[in-house]
Length: 60
Image 1 (cartoon, rainbow, N blue to C red):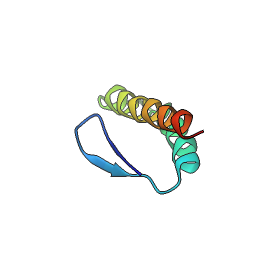
Image 2: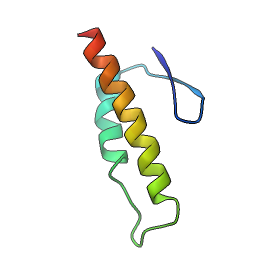
Image 3: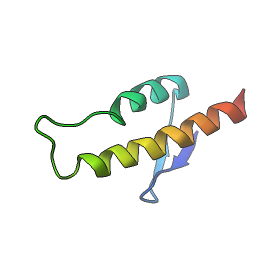
C-alpha cells in the first residue's frame, strides 16, 4: 500500500503492523539533549502513525 506523508511524498508500506510498531517508537523519540528539529520530527511521525492506524481500521 502507499500513503502520502505530511510533506506530500508517497510512502510505500509493505508491512502495516510492523510500520505502526516502528512509528510508535519514532513519534516519541527525542535526542538527548533535545535538538531544534525534535518537535518537527515527532509531529511528522505522529501524523504518519494516525494515517496508518486509520488504514488498519479500514482494512480490518
